[in-house]
Image 1 (cartoon, rainbow, N blue to C red):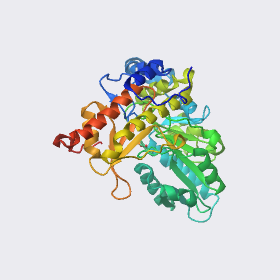
Image 2 (cartoon, rainbow, N blue to C red):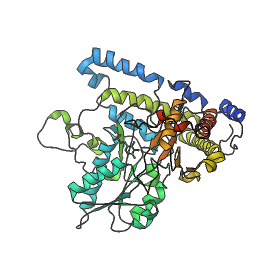
Image 3 (spheres, rainbow, N blue to C red):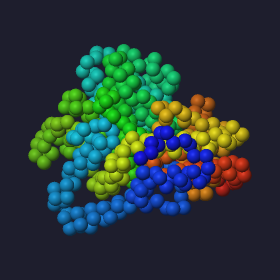
Length: 433
Ligand SMILES: *Cc1c(COP(=O)(O)O)cnc(C)c1O
């Protein structure tokens, strides 16, 4: 098998078609019900529907629910589903069996682990606690941290990316970071930052929303403390799919999460009075879980695990980098003439699986004009002076090919050169961008 690393960036459309023909991961696209007239560059926001999902859901509804009814909590394994799906996600993030749950949502899981981490730190410190994060983190992460800190009397410090290294000092108790930034696609060095946090005496929480299924992650190798992530992005679990949570085994039996519901009780069906936390990761459940959504997530995770026999995450990563290299290379040819900037790092080690562009004017209508051409990316609003508007393109190597990436860049060039984006129909803002 040829190594993806050494292959040069294709310089013609025909060369892209050739690359697709010999792509060892090319067959994985057949797992998806992806409309053939779309170039889908938004798998980082909502992954594509796997072909098996409808059948699995139909079975869960008509047979398991319809016929099995209440018996299916045992017979169909509904009760264990968060743990079983968690075990499969564990394989993608360097965690072990019994350490991960597919449960609740990303925001809620973040609240749980942040409070658990503050609880661990609080037992060691007398002074008010400090949570450090990045101002450029995904807003919900900072909103949740604001709420948790308000309740716990802790302080939230959100600094610029450049100031992060110096801000990790002995005054920090919990460092809460997102591994791959949702706007820029910049990726942190998980192992190095975790080491630095530990040296300062802090615990670390990694948000893997844009990492799980997109880039190789090894939580144990990095020696992280807590991690959470998202099921509906690169894991293809469907809209609003449950997220996941991981806690290092050294903390799992010590830390308490605050949503002490009955599913996280040591004996939920004993119906005893008084909360007694279940051992390990199981205490990170709260109440009844959305079984149908978990079934869909299980299928989504299968589409990523299907790469295991083909080189796994390392092979997916190599293809993802080759696709983003190609996109960057094509955009570079016209970006300068049209005021476009590529904000995603060019260094492979600092790049996730997306490419983000900025332009002083027209980012939103450009994305709309691309969507009208069947090229689906998305727009992320800036916040005035510090962060510009972003045209965001996600590259999911499970179902994207080189020729599509070539054509996507060509479409963007035409949208700009023909001033198509100035058409009034592309200016109206939708509720979800
Ligand atoms: C997508 C994403 C979320 C989503 O949170 P939900 O609770 O699933 O809505 C949270 N954090 C980050 C960093 C994300 O990228």
